[in-house]
Length: 401
Ligand SMILES: [Zn+2]
Image (tube, rainbow, N blue to C red):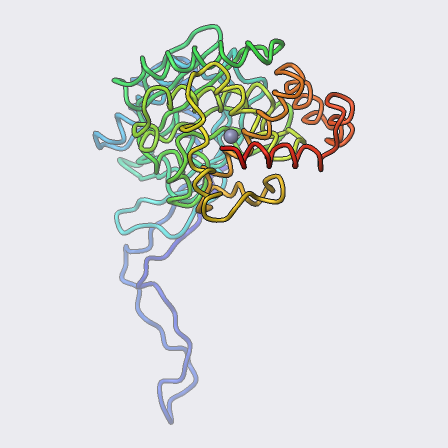
């Protein structure tokens, strides 16, 4: 069934009002020039999406180009969806037209929200499901796809343009910058090894996605522009959902990441991989334990001195003194002014615990509390202390930095 909704161009307005004294109360009609009323074609758009989905399923780049608008940008974009999907083994793809967004352009283009589902075979348990913005245009009586993605809604990275892909049994890395793929793949492999030394029963499945730039990252995770400007990488679910089966991946901010030294890059990826392995988004542990444990795992095998790994908290202490309490969740706001210092202080809580009873005790505390045991009971059971004692020991460590 063809459902066509008419959208009038800007001049197509009917204003109601009196023309002036003495005039009749007939409406004032602004003439709409013939031919300027143009229509979106949701049914045609749905067909185009279906054709694109089949092209992806059958690895048919030519077929994808045939539903793209007649611009090099659109042709290359749709072709890249097919090559991305083949290289990364993207399966369970579904593309469903939801509703148009805003009004139709003078050139007959319009954008619509499209429901997208996809899954990285061998890595994701269930498909991610989100909505993205797709642009359409009618060419030669057929609806073609002119663009994908916008600041509103989410733009999955594999739909944002060509990606270079590296795949092993335990890592899947997608990078918009092909020249850096090898480096990201090495870092991802290293991160898996580092994390598996601590979280030994992890099933070793790490997906790392690297957007072309910060904007690409922010669109992929549907956050406002600038939100990740302090963040080198972030772990989250591909569609924003938080459940046991959510597809949890690491997303790199290439602009901040490139500014780190090699050891910094290793630490960042191992930190994020710890979140993936430790069920970051669904963890019920307090933020200081989630973040402190990730840094504990990531820094465990580095020989970085505390003068570097605790430099920012030492500076804060010089200004503000030693904090009275363990870091609160709100302290980890990623736009916060002293974020680095907060992370370092959380890491030092885990270091304090490791000094007491060793690394395996820290791992047990993290795993048990993540899975819902109370912090109090686990501190008591594993370390024989209460939170107040832990805080006092940690404050001593901070004092001695
Ligand atoms: Zn983290």
